[in-house]
Length: 371
Image (cartoon, rainbow, N blue to C red; front, side, top):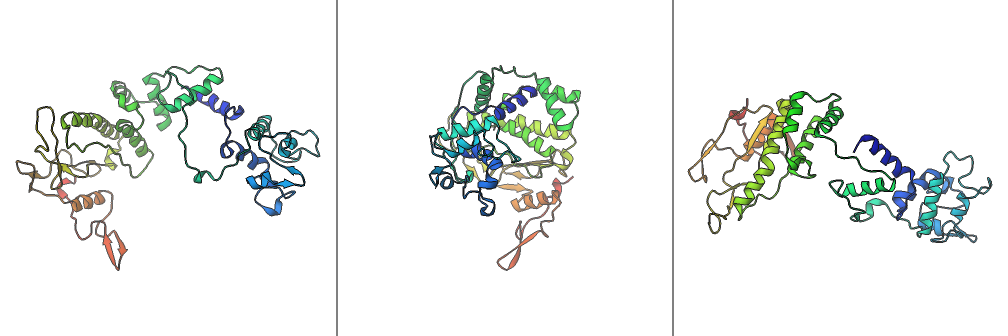
Protein backbone atom coordinates (compact mmCIF):
# COMPACT_ATOMS: atom_id res chain seq x y z
CA UNK A 1 0.00 0.00 0.00
CA UNK A 2 1.42 3.45 -0.84
CA UNK A 3 2.44 5.55 2.15
CA UNK A 4 -0.10 8.22 1.31
CA UNK A 5 -2.86 5.64 1.61
CA UNK A 6 -1.49 4.45 4.95
CA UNK A 7 -1.50 7.99 6.28
CA UNK A 8 -5.01 8.57 5.02
CA UNK A 9 -6.21 5.34 6.61
CA UNK A 10 -4.77 6.37 9.98
CA UNK A 11 -6.52 9.73 9.66
CA UNK A 12 -9.81 8.03 8.87
CA UNK A 13 -9.56 5.69 11.85
CA UNK A 14 -8.96 8.60 14.21
CA UNK A 15 -11.39 11.16 12.83
CA UNK A 16 -14.47 9.08 11.97
CA UNK A 17 -16.90 8.15 14.79
CA UNK A 18 -17.11 4.45 15.40
CA UNK A 19 -20.16 2.72 13.93
CA UNK A 20 -19.73 -0.67 15.54
CA UNK A 21 -19.61 -1.85 19.13
CA UNK A 22 -17.70 0.53 21.37
CA UNK A 23 -15.33 -0.63 24.10
CA UNK A 24 -14.66 1.41 27.21
CA UNK A 25 -10.89 0.84 27.34
CA UNK A 26 -10.35 1.44 23.63
CA UNK A 27 -12.91 4.14 22.76
CA UNK A 28 -14.21 5.82 25.93
CA UNK A 29 -11.51 5.83 28.60
CA UNK A 30 -9.10 7.99 26.49
CA UNK A 31 -11.83 10.62 26.01
CA UNK A 32 -12.82 10.75 29.67
CA UNK A 33 -9.19 10.68 30.83
CA UNK A 34 -8.41 13.71 28.68
CA UNK A 35 -11.47 15.81 29.54
CA UNK A 36 -13.15 14.55 32.72
CA UNK A 37 -10.90 12.58 35.09
CA UNK A 38 -9.10 15.66 36.41
CA UNK A 39 -12.29 16.71 38.20
CA UNK A 40 -14.14 13.39 38.35
CA UNK A 41 -11.43 10.79 38.83
CA UNK A 42 -9.53 8.93 41.52
CA UNK A 43 -8.05 12.02 43.26
CA UNK A 44 -10.40 12.96 46.13
CA UNK A 45 -8.65 16.31 46.59
CA UNK A 46 -9.56 17.58 43.13
CA UNK A 47 -12.86 15.72 42.71
CA UNK A 48 -15.88 17.97 42.04
CA UNK A 49 -19.45 17.30 43.22
CA UNK A 50 -18.37 13.94 44.65
CA UNK A 51 -18.71 12.41 41.17
CA UNK A 52 -16.41 9.74 39.80
CA UNK A 53 -16.46 8.81 36.11
CA UNK A 54 -13.48 6.43 36.19
CA UNK A 55 -15.53 3.60 37.75
CA UNK A 56 -18.91 2.10 36.92
CA UNK A 57 -20.04 2.44 40.54
CA UNK A 58 -19.32 6.16 40.55
CA UNK A 59 -20.88 6.82 37.15
CA UNK A 60 -24.09 4.89 37.94
CA UNK A 61 -24.45 6.29 41.50
CA UNK A 62 -27.52 8.36 42.35
CA UNK A 63 -26.66 11.98 43.29
CA UNK A 64 -29.84 13.63 44.62
CA UNK A 65 -31.96 12.20 41.83
CA UNK A 66 -29.35 12.52 39.09
CA UNK A 67 -27.08 9.84 37.67
CA UNK A 68 -24.20 10.61 35.33
CA UNK A 69 -24.88 7.52 33.25
CA UNK A 70 -28.11 5.58 32.95
CA UNK A 71 -27.28 2.70 30.60
CA UNK A 72 -29.31 2.93 27.38
CA UNK A 73 -31.15 6.11 28.43
CA UNK A 74 -29.89 9.39 26.95
CA UNK A 75 -32.53 11.59 28.58
CA UNK A 76 -31.79 10.39 32.11
CA UNK A 77 -27.99 10.43 31.68
CA UNK A 78 -26.65 13.67 33.16
CA UNK A 79 -23.37 13.19 31.30
CA UNK A 80 -25.12 13.45 27.92
CA UNK A 81 -27.19 16.44 29.07
CA UNK A 82 -24.07 18.28 30.20
CA UNK A 83 -21.77 17.65 27.22
CA UNK A 84 -24.44 18.74 24.70
CA UNK A 85 -25.65 21.72 26.73
CA UNK A 86 -25.02 25.16 25.18
CA UNK A 87 -25.41 27.08 28.46
CA UNK A 88 -21.96 28.14 29.71
CA UNK A 89 -23.06 27.53 33.32
CA UNK A 90 -24.27 23.99 32.56
CA UNK A 91 -21.94 22.60 29.86
CA UNK A 92 -19.17 20.16 30.74
CA UNK A 93 -16.26 20.44 30.47
CA UNK A 94 -16.49 24.12 31.47
CA UNK A 95 -15.62 26.65 28.73
CA UNK A 96 -12.30 27.49 30.43
CA UNK A 97 -11.15 23.86 30.57
CA UNK A 98 -8.00 23.35 28.41
CA UNK A 99 -9.41 20.19 26.82
CA UNK A 100 -12.78 20.43 25.11
CA UNK A 101 -14.82 17.63 23.59
CA UNK A 102 -15.02 17.51 19.81
CA UNK A 103 -18.28 16.79 18.03
CA UNK A 104 -17.00 13.32 17.19
CA UNK A 105 -16.12 12.59 20.83
CA UNK A 106 -19.55 13.76 22.02
CA UNK A 107 -21.26 11.47 19.51
CA UNK A 108 -19.02 8.59 20.57
CA UNK A 109 -20.03 9.06 24.24
CA UNK A 110 -23.67 9.29 23.19
CA UNK A 111 -23.44 6.07 21.19
CA UNK A 112 -21.66 4.32 24.09
CA UNK A 113 -24.45 5.22 26.54
CA UNK A 114 -27.04 3.97 24.03
CA UNK A 115 -25.15 0.68 23.78
CA UNK A 116 -25.39 0.25 27.55
CA UNK A 117 -22.52 2.37 28.92
CA UNK A 118 -20.51 -0.70 29.91
CA UNK A 119 -17.28 -0.21 31.84
CA UNK A 120 -14.28 -2.55 31.58
CA UNK A 121 -11.52 -3.46 34.02
CA UNK A 122 -7.83 -3.09 33.34
CA UNK A 123 -6.98 -4.60 29.95
CA UNK A 124 -4.35 -6.91 31.49
CA UNK A 125 -7.08 -8.81 33.37
CA UNK A 126 -9.43 -9.21 30.39
CA UNK A 127 -9.04 -12.56 28.54
CA UNK A 128 -8.20 -11.88 24.88
CA UNK A 129 -10.81 -12.80 22.28
CA UNK A 130 -10.09 -13.71 18.70
CA UNK A 131 -11.30 -10.91 16.43
CA UNK A 132 -14.02 -11.75 13.95
CA UNK A 133 -12.96 -11.30 10.34
CA UNK A 134 -14.97 -8.30 9.18
CA UNK A 135 -14.79 -8.76 5.43
CA UNK A 136 -13.19 -10.66 2.64
CA UNK A 137 -11.45 -9.62 -0.51
CA UNK A 138 -9.01 -10.96 -3.05
CA UNK A 139 -6.86 -7.99 -2.10
CA UNK A 140 -4.42 -8.61 0.76
CA UNK A 141 -2.66 -11.64 2.13
CA UNK A 142 -3.84 -12.09 5.72
CA UNK A 143 -6.66 -11.41 8.17
CA UNK A 144 -5.35 -7.96 9.07
CA UNK A 145 -5.73 -6.90 5.45
CA UNK A 146 -9.46 -7.62 5.63
CA UNK A 147 -9.85 -4.96 8.35
CA UNK A 148 -7.84 -2.48 6.27
CA UNK A 149 -9.92 -3.28 3.19
CA UNK A 150 -13.14 -2.67 5.15
CA UNK A 151 -11.96 0.79 6.27
CA UNK A 152 -10.88 1.69 2.75
CA UNK A 153 -14.23 0.57 1.36
CA UNK A 154 -16.15 2.62 3.94
CA UNK A 155 -14.12 5.67 2.89
CA UNK A 156 -14.82 5.06 -0.80
CA UNK A 157 -11.19 4.19 -1.53
CA UNK A 158 -9.81 1.41 -3.70
CA UNK A 159 -6.61 -0.39 -2.65
CA UNK A 160 -3.59 0.13 -4.86
CA UNK A 161 -2.10 -2.94 -6.58
CA UNK A 162 0.98 -4.48 -5.01
CA UNK A 163 4.15 -2.53 -5.72
CA UNK A 164 6.85 -4.03 -7.92
CA UNK A 165 9.74 -5.87 -6.32
CA UNK A 166 12.09 -3.07 -7.38
CA UNK A 167 9.91 -0.55 -5.53
CA UNK A 168 9.66 -2.74 -2.43
CA UNK A 169 13.44 -3.16 -2.29
CA UNK A 170 13.96 0.57 -2.71
CA UNK A 171 11.55 1.35 0.14
CA UNK A 172 13.20 -1.23 2.41
CA UNK A 173 16.70 0.02 1.68
CA UNK A 174 15.77 3.67 2.22
CA UNK A 175 14.02 2.80 5.51
CA UNK A 176 16.97 0.79 6.84
CA UNK A 177 19.98 2.72 5.55
CA UNK A 178 18.68 5.97 4.10
CA UNK A 179 20.29 5.02 0.78
CA UNK A 180 18.97 3.30 -2.38
CA UNK A 181 19.98 -0.34 -2.91
CA UNK A 182 23.21 -1.14 -4.73
CA UNK A 183 22.94 -2.91 -8.11
CA UNK A 184 24.31 -6.24 -6.86
CA UNK A 185 21.82 -6.23 -3.98
CA UNK A 186 18.95 -5.51 -6.36
CA UNK A 187 20.02 -8.33 -8.68
CA UNK A 188 20.08 -10.87 -5.82
CA UNK A 189 16.69 -9.72 -4.54
CA UNK A 190 14.99 -9.85 -7.95
CA UNK A 191 16.34 -13.35 -8.63
CA UNK A 192 14.95 -14.69 -5.35
CA UNK A 193 11.45 -15.97 -6.16
CA UNK A 194 10.85 -17.93 -2.95
CA UNK A 195 7.13 -17.62 -2.03
CA UNK A 196 7.89 -18.42 1.64
CA UNK A 197 9.60 -15.04 2.10
CA UNK A 198 6.21 -13.30 2.02
CA UNK A 199 4.49 -15.80 4.32
CA UNK A 200 4.33 -14.38 7.88
CA UNK A 201 5.86 -16.72 10.44
CA UNK A 202 7.66 -18.89 7.89
CA UNK A 203 11.31 -19.73 8.45
CA UNK A 204 12.25 -17.71 5.36
CA UNK A 205 10.38 -14.63 6.59
CA UNK A 206 11.99 -15.03 10.01
CA UNK A 207 15.44 -15.10 8.39
CA UNK A 208 14.71 -11.70 6.88
CA UNK A 209 13.48 -10.50 10.26
CA UNK A 210 16.63 -11.88 11.93
CA UNK A 211 18.83 -9.94 9.54
CA UNK A 212 16.93 -6.76 10.23
CA UNK A 213 17.18 -7.29 13.99
CA UNK A 214 20.94 -7.81 13.63
CA UNK A 215 21.16 -4.59 11.64
CA UNK A 216 19.46 -2.84 14.55
CA UNK A 217 22.08 -4.19 17.02
CA UNK A 218 19.88 -6.83 18.67
CA UNK A 219 22.41 -9.00 20.52
CA UNK A 220 20.69 -12.40 20.55
CA UNK A 221 18.33 -13.77 17.90
CA UNK A 222 16.94 -17.30 17.89
CA UNK A 223 15.00 -18.93 15.04
CA UNK A 224 12.95 -22.09 15.48
CA UNK A 225 11.76 -24.58 12.87
CA UNK A 226 9.68 -27.48 14.13
CA UNK A 227 8.71 -30.85 12.69
CA UNK A 228 12.01 -32.78 12.48
CA UNK A 229 10.96 -35.76 14.63
CA UNK A 230 10.68 -38.22 11.73
CA UNK A 231 9.94 -41.60 13.30
CA UNK A 232 8.02 -42.31 10.11
CA UNK A 233 7.27 -40.72 6.76
CA UNK A 234 10.85 -39.51 6.51
CA UNK A 235 11.49 -39.40 2.73
CA UNK A 236 8.78 -36.84 2.01
CA UNK A 237 8.96 -34.97 5.33
CA UNK A 238 12.74 -34.48 5.35
CA UNK A 239 12.69 -33.14 1.81
CA UNK A 240 10.07 -30.57 2.83
CA UNK A 241 11.99 -29.53 5.97
CA UNK A 242 15.21 -29.01 4.02
CA UNK A 243 13.31 -27.06 1.38
CA UNK A 244 12.00 -24.78 4.14
CA UNK A 245 15.41 -24.08 5.68
CA UNK A 246 18.34 -24.56 3.28
CA UNK A 247 17.75 -21.68 0.90
CA UNK A 248 16.68 -19.12 3.55
CA UNK A 249 19.66 -19.99 5.76
CA UNK A 250 22.05 -19.56 2.84
CA UNK A 251 20.32 -16.27 2.07
CA UNK A 252 20.80 -15.06 5.64
CA UNK A 253 24.51 -15.90 5.51
CA UNK A 254 24.83 -14.16 2.14
CA UNK A 255 23.05 -11.04 3.41
CA UNK A 256 25.23 -10.80 6.50
CA UNK A 257 28.41 -11.30 4.49
CA UNK A 258 27.33 -8.78 1.86
CA UNK A 259 26.77 -6.14 4.55
CA UNK A 260 30.07 -6.80 6.32
CA UNK A 261 28.24 -8.14 9.38
CA UNK A 262 29.38 -11.77 9.31
CA UNK A 263 32.74 -10.78 10.81
CA UNK A 264 31.13 -9.96 14.16
CA UNK A 265 27.98 -12.12 14.01
CA UNK A 266 28.12 -15.75 15.17
CA UNK A 267 25.66 -18.20 13.63
CA UNK A 268 25.03 -21.55 15.34
CA UNK A 269 22.86 -24.21 13.67
CA UNK A 270 21.74 -27.28 15.60
CA UNK A 271 18.99 -29.31 17.21
CA UNK A 272 18.32 -31.23 20.40
CA UNK A 273 19.90 -34.53 19.23
CA UNK A 274 20.83 -36.55 16.15
CA UNK A 275 19.06 -39.36 14.30
CA UNK A 276 20.08 -42.95 13.68
CA UNK A 277 21.21 -43.90 10.17
CA UNK A 278 19.34 -47.19 10.35
CA UNK A 279 15.59 -47.57 9.98
CA UNK A 280 12.99 -47.34 12.72
CA UNK A 281 9.86 -49.32 11.93
CA UNK A 282 9.07 -51.12 8.72
CA UNK A 283 11.46 -50.34 5.87
CA UNK A 284 10.01 -49.81 2.40
CA UNK A 285 11.24 -47.83 -0.58
CA UNK A 286 8.57 -45.17 -0.01
CA UNK A 287 8.40 -44.98 3.77
CA UNK A 288 10.63 -45.40 6.81
CA UNK A 289 11.73 -43.48 9.91
CA UNK A 290 14.73 -42.87 12.17
CA UNK A 291 14.96 -42.88 15.96
CA UNK A 292 16.63 -40.44 18.37
CA UNK A 293 20.44 -40.64 18.52
CA UNK A 294 21.96 -38.92 21.57
CA UNK A 295 25.55 -40.18 21.18
CA UNK A 296 26.55 -38.02 18.24
CA UNK A 297 25.03 -35.42 15.98
CA UNK A 298 26.18 -32.64 13.69
CA UNK A 299 26.11 -28.89 14.17
CA UNK A 300 27.69 -26.06 12.25
CA UNK A 301 28.86 -22.58 13.05
CA UNK A 302 29.82 -19.65 10.87
CA UNK A 303 30.87 -16.07 11.25
CA UNK A 304 32.79 -14.30 13.99
CA UNK A 305 36.04 -16.12 14.76
CA UNK A 306 35.10 -19.45 13.10
CA UNK A 307 37.58 -21.05 10.69
CA UNK A 308 36.09 -21.51 7.23
CA UNK A 309 35.52 -24.80 5.41
CA UNK A 310 36.54 -27.34 8.05
CA UNK A 311 34.90 -30.45 9.53
CA UNK A 312 35.80 -31.66 13.01
CA UNK A 313 35.02 -35.16 14.29
CA UNK A 314 34.44 -38.59 12.78
CA UNK A 315 32.18 -41.54 13.62
CA UNK A 316 32.35 -45.22 12.79
CA UNK A 317 30.83 -46.58 9.58
CA UNK A 318 27.44 -46.85 11.26
CA UNK A 319 27.48 -43.23 12.51
CA UNK A 320 26.96 -44.50 16.04
CA UNK A 321 30.20 -44.12 18.03
CA UNK A 322 32.66 -41.23 17.77
CA UNK A 323 36.17 -42.25 16.66
CA UNK A 324 38.03 -38.95 16.22
CA UNK A 325 37.95 -35.47 17.77
CA UNK A 326 34.90 -35.82 20.04
CA UNK A 327 33.35 -32.52 21.10
CA UNK A 328 31.30 -32.47 24.28
CA UNK A 329 28.42 -30.02 24.63
CA UNK A 330 30.39 -28.26 27.37
CA UNK A 331 33.22 -27.72 24.88
CA UNK A 332 30.76 -26.30 22.39
CA UNK A 333 29.34 -23.89 24.98
CA UNK A 334 32.80 -22.86 26.17
CA UNK A 335 33.78 -22.06 22.57
CA UNK A 336 30.60 -20.09 21.89
CA UNK A 337 31.15 -18.04 25.05
CA UNK A 338 34.77 -17.42 24.01
CA UNK A 339 33.64 -16.14 20.61
CA UNK A 340 31.25 -13.80 22.41
CA UNK A 341 34.12 -12.42 24.48
CA UNK A 342 33.34 -14.34 27.67
CA UNK A 343 35.79 -16.57 29.59
CA UNK A 344 33.64 -19.54 30.65
CA UNK A 345 35.99 -20.27 33.57
CA UNK A 346 35.62 -16.77 35.05
CA UNK A 347 31.88 -16.23 34.49
CA UNK A 348 30.21 -17.68 37.59
CA UNK A 349 27.08 -17.42 39.69
CA UNK A 350 26.70 -18.29 43.38
CA UNK A 351 24.38 -21.19 44.24
CA UNK A 352 24.11 -23.31 47.42
CA UNK A 353 27.34 -22.02 48.89
CA UNK A 354 29.69 -22.20 45.93
CA UNK A 355 30.40 -20.52 42.60
CA UNK A 356 29.03 -22.34 39.55
CA UNK A 357 30.06 -21.90 35.91
CA UNK A 358 27.71 -22.22 32.95
CA UNK A 359 29.93 -25.11 31.84
CA UNK A 360 30.10 -26.48 35.42
CA UNK A 361 33.56 -28.03 35.95
CA UNK A 362 33.94 -29.03 32.30
CA UNK A 363 34.56 -27.42 28.96
CA UNK A 364 37.60 -26.56 26.88
CA UNK A 365 37.99 -24.44 23.77
CA UNK A 366 37.69 -26.15 20.37
CA UNK A 367 40.87 -24.55 19.07
CA UNK A 368 40.65 -26.30 15.71
CA UNK A 369 37.45 -24.37 15.02
CA UNK A 370 38.90 -20.95 15.72
CA UNK A 371 40.34 -18.81 12.96
